[in-house]
Image 1 (cartoon, rainbow, N blue to C red):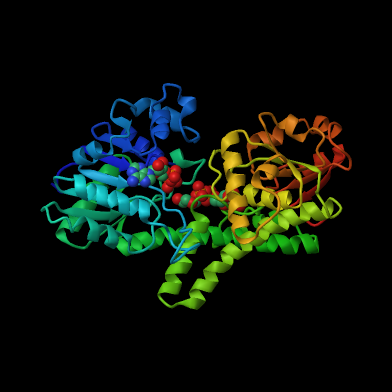
Image 2 (image 1 turned 90 degrees about the vertical axis):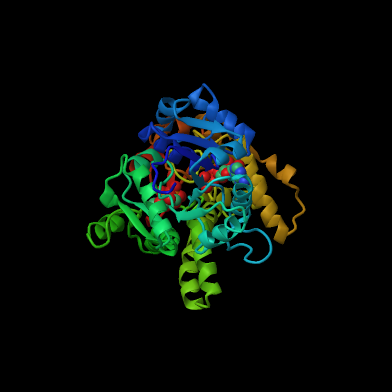
Length: 477
Ligand code: UDX
Ligand code: ADP
């Protein structure tokens, strides 16, 4: 069957990766039936909601793609077994968080969701299938998948491919539509090549063939970790320089512009910030570090681990600067947070710097007032509780999470969040933050009125003229 054209695809996992990726495949390949399944009933109901504003993830342009393909050849369902049985090709897009227990705790990827999928596929499949790992996974996962799947003894054969997703949230639709490259890793056997070709043929419906790279499985898996490690390293590198800029009076944005003009360096991923977040960077680097340790390469592990340490330092530095400038305490002071998502144009908050900054300020007994254009109140509360409980695991505190939450208010309008505040902290670079009436904001705040711009997006000159005391990342006073 591997030489046949694919006409039925199933994707397990309707999240930030599975949802948009399958919507794009369905839009570009009307001849392929694409079914996205998930155990989470609410998530599937949201994907099926007639009101496209209710889609479970916010991603510019996604609603149009879903509207075009949904119920034509794109389906969202909780009938996992049925979708597996019917599909010729199965994408696995379930979450692979960092392990929070046991061996590899805090570093290795937790593969339990992947393993469950593999066992379910093995149980249900009655004919040969191509399995595509689409989640971020450490090297050798394909091998583990293959071992589970091919030990059923019922004669069904599985071909495992690795095809890591390189979409970035906020620009996912464009990244999927015109990808720099699509990567497909497979076995160098006749069957392996035929499976890779079947997936190449799917992407070839809209991606030029020269942008579809086929590699061995391990190269594909490791490329994903390496790409994210390199990108994160650029952010940590410029953030390291931002600390030096603040001491010397240099301007980190000027440095980014100057070094980015060097074509060998390039201009992207040089924006100093309060720290990188997102579901991938930290997790993938921790995976890389774990792999290096596993293969007894401690120097290589330490090299990459430093990228994370620098990021932790940057988040901490930002929070500490707020406390320092507010006369060494934020206890009982109102700090307005503009932004909670880990970057603009997404409602995803995983590993967002805002969570860590909030936690440090709450430890110093600040009152936090949060406004984000897309993140729900429930998500913000969940993030704070989760962070608090993790920290508490190591460090018992007298205050309960419930008491701590009394000092957190979530607003649906920005002006209410900033009214009577001692300081504003900009955590996400949402475009709308540049359009506010700063004169009005200033008049309604306590004086001296501080702005801590963790994204260097506000017009410093304008704000200073209005009367604010403005602190940026990487700009000396
Ligand atoms: C990343 C990779 O870019 C993508 O290819 C991969 O598939 C998943 O991980 P994502 O996490 O969605 O994508 O967003 P990205 O744009 O890479 O930003 C990650 C973090 O770095 C954000 O918190 C962002 O604000 C921060 N960042 C990015 C900076 O602080 N400065 C920069 O110059 C660029
Ligand atoms: P990502 O950013 O990698 O897409 P998400 O957490 O957004 O991660 O999405 C992963 C999805 O996978 C979740 O909606 C989760 O419910 C789903 N999932 C996890 N395990 C299974 C499983 N065994 N069967 C079906 N869906 C699953």
